Image 1 (spheres, rainbow, N blue to C red):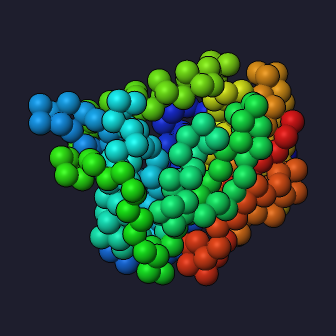
Image 2: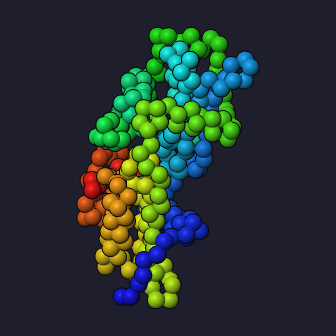
Image 3: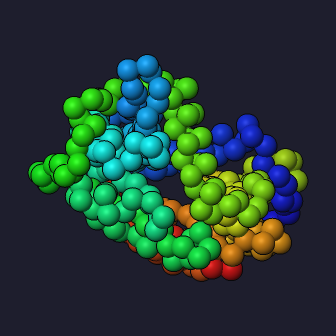
Length: 292
């Protein structure tokens, strides 16, 4: 079979992502009354100054991700973080989610999340370099009691309320500044996305991937058109991504998948950092890594 490997355009990347999502939906239908959306919550003072906030991404399989949570340094340890976690949980339940997940690191607030009933399901050693990070989850359908912090002064003065896109940007900026102070970026972001095309320019396979600022690479998705599956095409494309990742100083490639595609990743040298049981319902989701 004659084909060439070329960079993937942004338009093609969106098309490939749609193909991957459609295939996943065929394997695990969406939870009833649950749609993809992003929610923002903020805590502000009487003058409207942002004291803290969080961003929650709702996924149609019944999982919500607490993607960002940030509290201004001057207002920490007053119960604002707990207030935002409770707001995220309430919103996730309202959106018919049965899992709330998040990521944290050894310089963040893992003990606080565990007090709220979250449990570690993935351990990321030396990610970022010199640190440990974790993925945590909480089942929202198991009646875990709410945690009330001993210092709950904030609840008497403030409340969590819906935020805007501008609030989300401010939350992201505050969290990024905090993280960079602890772990400075060591690499410019680099796009690794590639496609395989035949002699007529038809797309055969594609991979969406890139290098992050902490010298890790993310393989966000890989797709092979059905007539070309189980012929080694996907593995050959991944080998190109891996080679370019090495050339860019990457030491580990991260990805995630569900059980219906896990064999491909394991055959290409990935190992499971952790797994989320019964997600989607009746399946298992894996967080993966390949040290290179």
